[in-house]
Image (cartoon, rainbow, N blue to C red; front, side, top):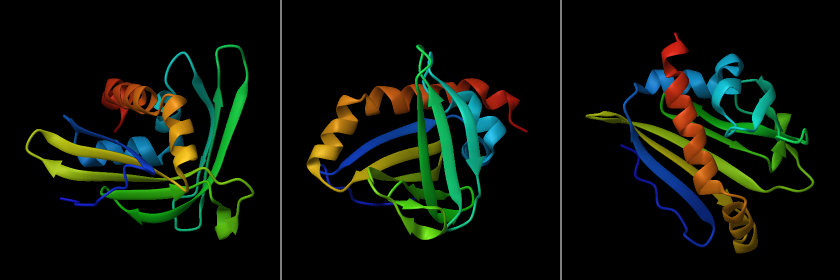
Length: 158
């Protein structure tokens, strides 16, 4: 089990027990055809996704809102431990190139649990203002809703 501490002033965290194997959750996070089905809480949609699953590789999505507005997210993978841990950031672009306006680094950990997987998602921010902004944007609701959507489509993941 991963035992990481977080800074309540800078980090937002959700932790849930999910009745799915780690491997299914991993595929949902690392294969674009799966990620696009659940990543953005409805009625929003993920309309584009590129995953180059290697340290320094690109993690790119485009989210579309109900009125058609689009929000790209472009980042870089930092750490990949298959079926266990995935770390990416928008502070760096692919190839570790610095980004102009970094917002957060995400850490996803998947640990064994008697009822499936202990799922922990942590968004780490550079300052309290960014953490508060992410919280006000609906981090807890949005990341939990997206996880619920992942669970709903899990039967489609082979």
